[in-house]
Length: 85
Image (cartoon, rainbow, N blue to C red):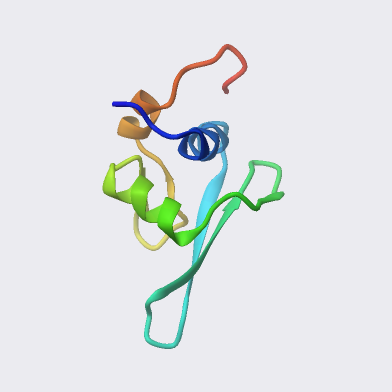
């Protein structure tokens, strides 16, 4: 299954140790998704539509209220490169 270039970038960041924080509004609906690198820098290329695509493909998951991280399925989807950690 092919994934878009934007999905590829996010999955690479997550594979290297990054995470996604989801910000919710008063009604507990997701209002914003923020992607952070392993160094703590915010990556601006993630919006709610892209977040939902990754979640629908089961490439990311959250466990016990923790930030979203990459899953084994996500690691299979992302094309491996030598510099991935």
